[in-house]
Amino acid sequence: MKTVFVIGAGPAGLFAANKLAQAGHQVLIFNRDIKPGGLAEYGIYPVKEKMKSGLRKQFAKILSHPNVHYFGHVPVGKEYDVPIELLQEFRPAAMIFAVGAQGTKKLGLPGEDARGVYSAKDFVYHYNLLPPFSKMDFSTGKRIAIVGMGNVMVDIARWLMLDDPNRQTEEVYVVARRGPFEAKFDEKEFVYIEDYLDRADFQDELKRIRDRLAAVGQDISKVAEATFPVLAKPDPGARMPRLRFRFLSSPCEIKVGADGRIERLVLTENLLVARDGGTAAKPTDRTFTLDVDTMIFAIGDVADPRVGLPYQSGSYVTNPAGNGNESGLYEVFDPQRGQVLAGTYVVGWARRASEGLVGIARQDAERGAVHVLKYLENVSEQPAATAEEIARSFARQGLQVVDKNDLNFLSRAEEKQARERGLASFKFADNESMLAAIEAEKTHSGSPASTG
Ligand SMILES: Cc1cc2nc3c(=O)[nH]c(=O)nc-3n(C[C@H](O)[C@H](O)[C@H](O)COP(=O)(O)OP(=O)(O)OC[C@H]3O[C@@H](n4cnc5c(N)ncnc54)[C@H](O)[C@@H]3O)c2cc1C
Image (cartoon, rainbow, N blue to C red):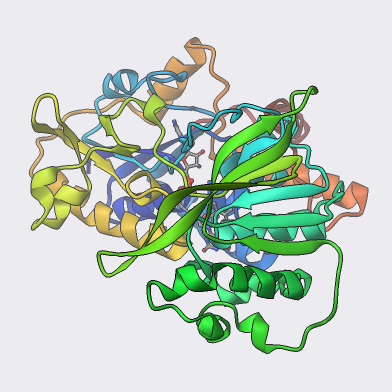
């Protein structure tokens, strides 16, 4: 039996932990957030309650394994409370980084820091009540541009048009650098917002770009069967708010009002060109503007450089020699020394940012775990610090760590709040309230503090 540290308790970290614990190893999980689940808890659309609660049950089962220990509210990284070097002092046999894609892809546009300009991840964290985003200003106005054409765009448009209790939305513009044939969202997700599609505007937009699509052999009469099946359904008539698309358009400048908030978005018109068997956008010198008071980038994320793993072009560096050898895809590689960081692995969205649904993150983590298990077979025993020793060390450092028992207290406190407020469910929206609720439940139950 060896001790493995897993950093991050999203789907990838938890499913990797499961594999290792099942093989008889001790697994210590360190998670930035108090609660486990990552984007399954704080990203998946709020009303997908059945999916969320199904995942929560699976995660609770993994955490209940006696070999699995949980340290929540512990951000790991060179710019966070617990640098990697400190974890190494506890002598794990291997470390698996499953921290997701917490870095933001900046476009480097003039005006990008204006109020009302948000990254999709931060916006989604806000409406899913992840501290500290839950308490930050993510105000939206009447006219909103969402850049990107995947499922995250659909979730955000759905929130803005249907579910945000503070919504003032009149128009949502989806801005896409390529055309309608390159839409990436799933039809079953788009169904939720399709009645708001401004059909007349959509047809005008198709006409506007028809010749540019024809240049790469795309025919606008095929859009309905290819990517927008809604067009084959009867038009429900004009609805508010209106959902509009601006294809072959890339943001090039954000105009900021006297109040510091975005007031216009300048877009470059693109051509579509054939490239590598697919298509690519090629900018022209023509521009146009949209009057918008809010802009949300939903173009995927990058790995977080503040963790301190070797980092290049938005990703943690993995073993380049691993091409023909799958284990290399998961091994962290130090390009300066030209060698693998022994026993250090990445899985899930930390390995391939913003790639796929929970099932894909799970598969990736379980595959990675198989390679970690092989590595452990050949590594010599070294006595690692125990969960209790690490908890004591963190306490000395002044960290308020949340363990498995605390998570049960927190669930109980949230269930109580839901009952008292007559709600189906309730979530505390800041860390202080969660920590206070845990303490209150502990005192109420007369339970001593515990670790692991
Ligand atoms: C808006 C949105 C909606 C989605 N909807 C769906 C859906 O409906 N269905 C579906 O199947 N998939 C959905 N997905 C995809 C799904 O959420 C991901 O596939 C999955 O969560 C990725 O898992 P992960 O564990 O790699 O990363 P994450 O889920 O991001 O988990 C990362 C974990 O690492 C922790 N962490 C981060 N940094 C640190 C650090 N420095 N130190 C310690 N811990 C750290 C975080 O606290 C978090 O717990 C959605 C994604 C998004 C963005």
